[in-house]
Length: 195
Image (cartoon, rainbow, N blue to C red):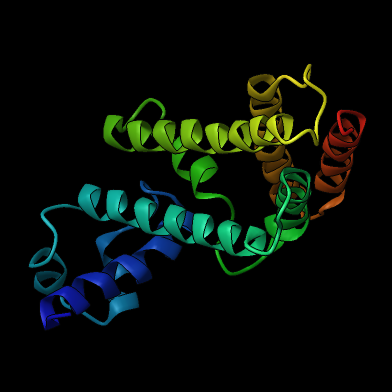
């Protein structure tokens, strides 16, 4: 990596946590300057606008979440184990202090009416997340782990939206109680559809 690339990456990494915590509108260039120890010219010498920083910050955070999920599922051989592993990943994720909540939820809520670029990025990430869950269910049906009537698309939408909703409630209330309830409900549905 060149010095310019390292500086750009530093800005993205430092800004991402601030933006995920304070929001796009609530994060100022001064916040980013303080976190990176760069002058305004150092920030704007690498990015054309705060909106560009926000877009890159979302990509960075989303990539980190996907990497963590893939790592937590890497040792799960069967489709059933992968679905249960995904639920285990989310069971304690909402209150971790390392990322200040789900970037899909945080960026999506703020961008839905204000930032079409971020809205499109979040929409694509939601579609990909649901498709990943559906793919695991379909694999399980093909390998005989799940009943043929287990609706992969319906389960994917249900699981994703229930988990995202639980993340919001857990973050606001400071408790993982709701996430434990949601993951238990989804776990029962997986068990009920297992052969």
